[in-house]
Length: 532
Image (cartoon, rainbow, N blue to C red):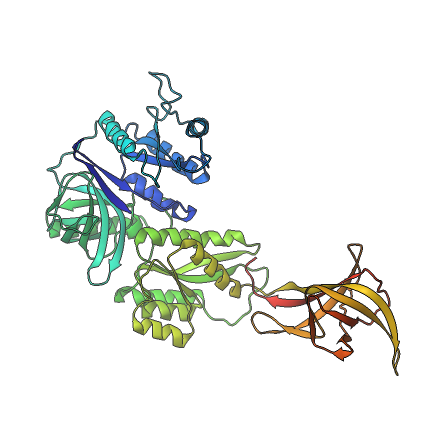
């Protein structure tokens, strides 16, 4: 997200680019740093430096090495209002942790000492709850910008960076950008990668209209014909003809080099495979054919030792989120013991379409939506229901990934899952003679859960056969190699199907080795598809 903060006393404006902290949004944080002059490193006073902190520091150091003086670092030590936090002690701890990462702060540096990555960084204690220190932070950022002597020509043709882009119903393609150089005006022709268009609406981050935007100002652009990529540079050109020529040359260059046109002009060329955006008729036939070939429906079962390919279709509210969800989905494959590959059949910005549902049906994929408002058009929802295609939608990345794992489990071979239903202690042992033979009865009290005579029902409604094992002094004495079944379960001389915690009962297992003080456990084995 982007926010403007202005201070009339200092005659300055500060633009904040707020990027998510979840590990899945690494590429989005990288895109944010490409549009920043100063990185504000937020470190919790009670936690100190975290893995995400080190990741951001690595990004900062790589930029500082490649372009010395182009970016600075300011540390915001937050949560100083939290009970038990000693500000001085936390400051010392964080400064030492940063020093271990090669970052010198002003509190540790001598007057003329610089670190390998530029001048010592300011460390400002702040509280998001009370607002303490926020004015000091703004003042520190303005001061740092003066030290860096940041300048830009505000009359030249605009250059900037795309922070995020999405498809908005009623508006079309909406791109959030930062102007880095020159001025941007409504009616300008803009190009980003191989995407272009004429600015129909130019607005600020609060939705208000703008006539023009100047360096370091965040803007919202409506007018791109297709969705640009987060992190791509954006430039203003003189005319539509020049924009078309520039895009054509870039597409030709990308084609000659054998890479995706959309990824050829990324600010970060290591961000991964090209994202495919659905919805254009020219692509639908080829994409569907590719799906049919890949999942060619030969009808053979997957061998347990073979690579298991799990197809997915990913939809998101914006391009930056799309990349983050894709990366997080791909990383799920590393969390299982089996050799699996998460295969994004198709990805795009916006709600799921009938084309997405058709591809999901043909490939056996599920559709995952992140941050998408609504479940798509009515035709897509109706088709998904009739074709049995799963559409999972969530605004929280953790929850979406958990739901994804549950669906991915259906692609994996079933495994045996043991469930303990209950246990009881043997209070007495006695024999009963019947017409056929003698039976050894364990007089018991149920201490936990339930004991079942024969069968019970799983959470999914499946019928489970119950078995028993006998423990003596913590070790299994019966029921480990053989599967013991209850022959009789009685309560007050009546045969019952189950008994509960606190009940007394008589249990016949058909074994002689049962003693007073033994613990008898009731369990079942269920074959389930689980993500392990």
